Length: 162
Image 1 (cartoon, helix red, strand yellow):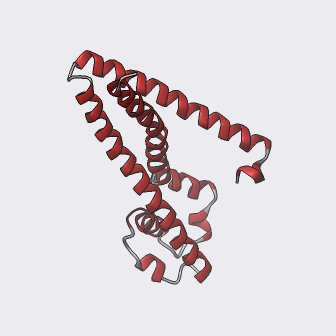
Image 2 (tube, rainbow, N blue to C red; image 1 turned 90 degrees about the horizontal axis):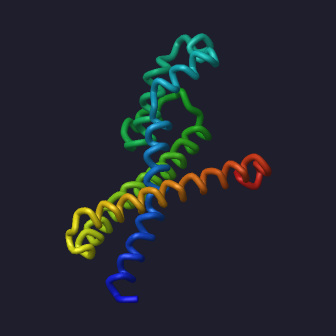
């Protein structure tokens, strides 16, 4: 195997492995910060009725901004949350920030590898698109396989999965 083919194989496998991270990161960002979802859940659980003196949507928006961007630290400074909840929000913020770092770094590396793949393919568009298509297919299959595996573990032994 030539060095060029070895490099193409390493780059392709690396890109396949990055696709699930990118898919899961995008899905998390889309789902976790959907304010309409929270509004529906608040209505379903009667949060507005149980806490009529509070601006629930304002508090929720502040919490989501705090978790995603680290902004509105005043949400932590108010009296709505107790000390334990504030500590938990800080922990969650750190986990989410680290997750976003991994997500954005994965996107960056994916594009760098795509450029390298283009260079190694001799800038032949049809070959490059064929390789990218295969990488996307195998990466998506890998992401689905990981999802099914996690689902199976979750269904059989939740404590172990958690």
